[in-house]
Length: 112
Ligand SMILES: [Zn+2]
Ligand SMILES: [Zn+2]
Image 1 (tube, rainbow, N blue to C red):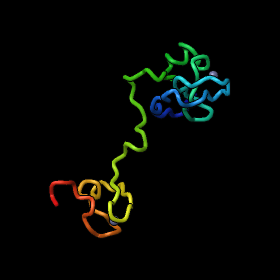
Image 2: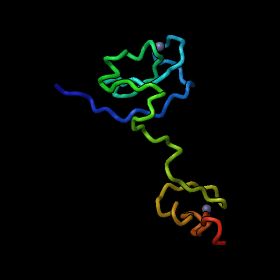
Image 3: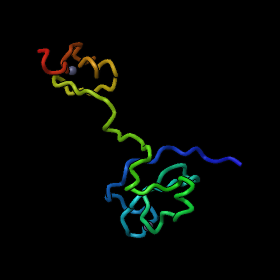
């Protein structure tokens, strides 16, 4: 029997996402849908209950002890103050280097 690979649950919905079952309620957590291979925001009623939660296929917003997918904006990045270009390259981020300006435009303060 083959089970779909489950990824880490996303960040809490923050009460801003509607339930993906179109029931009109606000999502209170994430439910793993193997057929779709993705986490869908669901309300309490559509969480699947204890059986689904026990299998690790549902995480409510208030579950803080579980590893979550990092939010996209938490990825290290640096934006050049001169040209506005954003880089995700670890060396650029560490040294404040802009590959577009060919200069250390984003150098951390205290060195200028
Ligand atoms: Zn619902
Ligand atoms: Zn630049």
